[in-house]
Image (cartoon, one colour):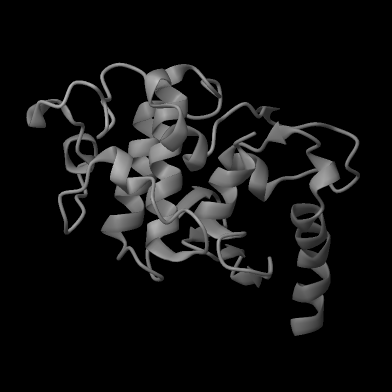
Amino acid sequence: RLLKTGAAVSPVILTLISKPVLAGYCPTGSVLASLNVSGHTHQGVPCSGRSPGYWKNHESEWPTPYVPTTSLDTVEGKKTRFNQVFTQPLSTDKTLFASLENSAGGGENAVRSHIVASLLNAASGYNTTFLSVTQVQMIWNNYKLSGGGSTGYWQPGSGVVLYADETKINGVTLAFGKPGSGGITGWLKENMS
């Protein structure tokens, strides 16, 4: 029985690991569960989001109403705080700008960093057909409500569970290599140019 399950899942695993299948296209949540194994059909929308590093270095491009920490407007109340934007707060009162730190590696810091970049992408019009501001907020809130850290998760489609650094499809864990290359962080990274 185990061999039958493994054989049924292996085409999906190979498809998810093979980047040429999507070739510059961002997979939507439901696409993760139903990727075309042949690789001849693009499913998703063109990727155009920006990375956490981009947003840290391009403060002048931050969309309204979000204000980075080092903005010329140094009035304390003007800096946008993470806890003002997301209903599931951080234990510390970080700004969105400070939340962009620690994007490398994995874990909750990497998820938070890529969530903030995704929020700014959505508000700037990057990948608007892929993720809206509300959807980005929902991903973070679901992740935190389910425990955050290594146990928190988001379910983008039937049978697909994304943890911080790990992806499971129908209960089978997919191996992506290093931390931050799978799970929520890896999925959000794939949607950034």
